[in-house]
Length: 348
Image 1 (cartoon, one colour):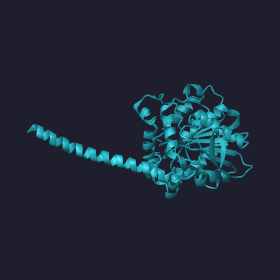
Image 2: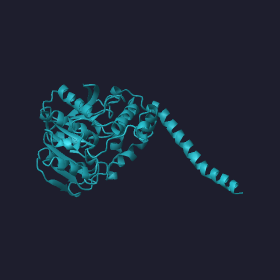
Image 3: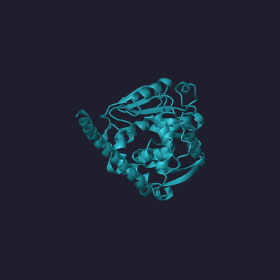
Image 4: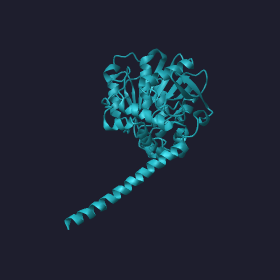
């Protein structure tokens, strides 16, 4: 009797598990089929006509440039999933202030080269930024690096400090507190299987169905994401090779050790660096404020502007306040932490 009950119980337990497994496999199969339909456009066809493509070292990059030609140049380097079209109000604010902006799509994001075999290390990305400056004949420039774009921006400042007039790091993901990755871990072994990682990436990061949910995990003010901004983040996902490029980047970011001049906290204080300013969301859960304060402890002369009530993407969570702080940071070399109340210039 007990064996019959046990057998019945197992069947009842296994049935929902099998149903979930079948649904999961069906979803993944659907994603694999959909990627062939979705990622069908060549980058040059899909990219906005307001920008242009430029060979920068080993990769072809897409850039958008605006503002007065005689203005001080500002190189904008975006974060995860961002591209030159997701700076929104930041670029117009800088242009109104007289700056010439050059927003660059660093691989694998935006419309730049889609190649999962590229070197995605901070050093390689920094050299692409330097090659961009050389190709545009920029003797010196301001650099603004947000999130994952902060690491190559800082590395660029270390490689060519005399070429950077000021570096502004916005909620920068520098990896200074992170333990060394283990390429032999189960996660990394899975990501190193090309087919498997492409299935995982296409079911999540490269899939526009999940763009809104993923983006909202990065921010504190959920209501700040407008339909127009969401559409902009999804826009490059039609480019052929997007899933493969994101997969290669995900493996490199998660599983390969980071080299370079700025990969280790102990080295930062010994480097010759240009003037730096930090802008950080006080409610950031991706790169928490403690990371900003640790960075400031390593570089005591660096001012930290902390924005209350703002998460990881201040330029879209509270654009008016971010733009005001950014413009002040470009001319501010103070050393105090500036805590800006949520009421100041809030658009939320």
